[in-house]
Length: 127
Image (cartoon, rainbow, N blue to C red; front, side):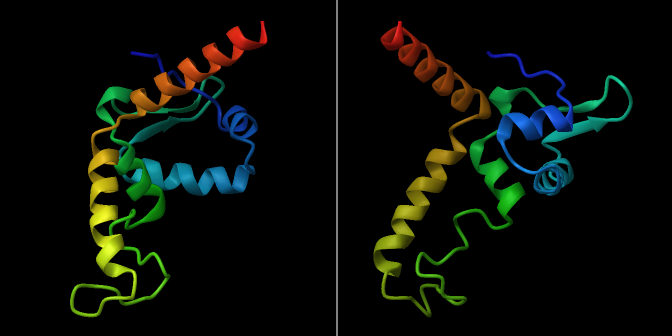
């Protein structure tokens, strides 16, 4: 498992290349969902509340985005269900259910390992 330690919000903002204000909103949602913890002070910052292998990607999406992918209509209609389907509903519903299952079975650790493998391959090609 890759190690995820404490990181300051400013360092995280720089690394993610997003504004401090946008990051604060995301971190607030992640903290409310119990996915991260924060501490103040000179050695403060944010860290994971659980091991990265125990945090599903779908949990992160739901925490940040609200409903996640399950509650969204691909065409953007406010009402899209089996009772009131949009034109894409017969195709989109099974696709988003499959995607939700995949994201539920992928962890933050899986994502980090995937990025590390891609970086290692890229550096070998560039060397």
